[in-house]
Amino acid sequence: SVQSCHQDYFSRQKNTNIRLTLPVVCFVWQIAMIILFGVFIRYDEESDTHWVETKAHDNITSDIENDFYFRYPSFQDVHVMIFVGFGFLMTFLKRYSFGAVGFNFLIASFGLQWALLMQGWFHSLDPQTGKIFIGVESLINADFCVAGCLIAYGAVLGKVSPVQLLVMTLFGVTLFAVEEYIILNLLHARDAGGSMVIHTFGGYYGLAISRVLYRPNLHQSKRMQGSVYHSDTFAMIGTLFLWMFWPSFNSAITDHGDGQHRAVINTYLCLASTVLTTVAISSLSQKTGKLDMVHIQNSTLAGGVALGTAAEFMISPYGALIVGFFCGIISTMGYIFISPFLEKTLKIQDTCGIHNLHAMPGVIGGIVGAITAAAASESVYGKQGLINTFDFTGDFKDRTVLTQGGYQAAGMCVSIVFGVVGGAIVGSILKLPIWGDPADENCFDDEVYWEVREPATHHLLFTI
Image (cartoon, rainbow, N blue to C red; front, side):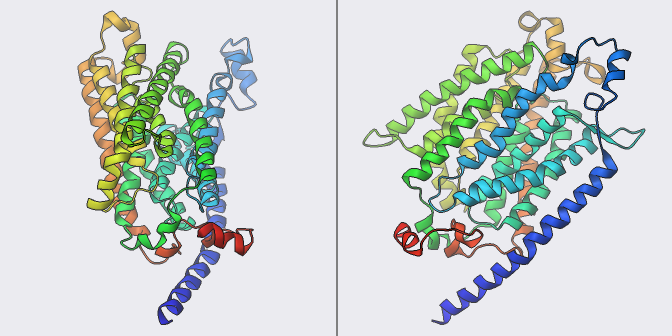
């Protein structure tokens, strides 16, 4: 038919675009990174060979004082979350596992290089030498930056091309570095686990992009939008990796000692509480009392998101359980009621439900952080404890806890604005018909961008 011929023609055109554009973008970007790293990036004093001289000068007697030994275990855990946890969490679609894990791998590797530069320019550029000095903490922060873009990827999973993902990541990392600088440096808000800076921003950034890229005919690929038994099992692997390592995520860049220790305990308890309420609400939502795997894969993680800001605060163990209790309820109810409303009424096609796992819990985390900060007292924290926890030093030495609570709330508003406005602008760029995105009937299918080595008959039966 004429319509079929037109579809084949445009499909060939898009395949041609991706064959030419993706290699060019990857090669040009990597060459640019080599040049920029050569100009700006250097080892910091703890990763440089002059560490021996630094030890002697500062009277350091052991290499164990090197920050590597404090931060590397947390870095390992965060790195696994980025590449394994996020990647496998998105493998629930029946025919998009290659895209979920493979494109996650691509944009994380692409983004972390740009993040080291962007965050370095904003946070650690030496005014005397014009260089950025990086160490293991820089690698953790770059992974955090990339996490915001991977969250946004969840909203457009299966509906965009790899080139669109690279463009989305380029702008996402840039926006992230700016909003992070405003929230952490100018407002001096505390957000060790990134409820505001990472999850709220990444969630609303992805949702805004998805809204701009709305596909009214997405039902043409409805046959590919569901899951099958083995794809849900693979996605659960991602959930378990994220769940186990989330205490490291929330504590990775907190102060050595009590702050890091407290953040691990609080996150650990909050996550456990979230699992129980998620299971309860999931079972209650079904007439048969059975569990929905979508809820178990996603809502069980919401507590880790929501406790990111307050993880290092004296929220108390029972307070962590309370946060987890309500997050499990709110996130699961979001999948049941809010996601259908967003798609039907607001035209937001959120493939992974990032609004329920990241955006809403991120806002909850910002609110919890603001309340906990405003309620802090010297009797609970101690005078020096308040100074250490909220970094009331230098220009901020006279700040009160009530003022700190206000700035915490302001930080959450900044992250929402950057996510929504930035996502709308980037979405408009991604909507240009030059990126080789899949046709409506080919969404959520690996065969558009990947060599899928399986017999055609098997594919036919699988699709049916």
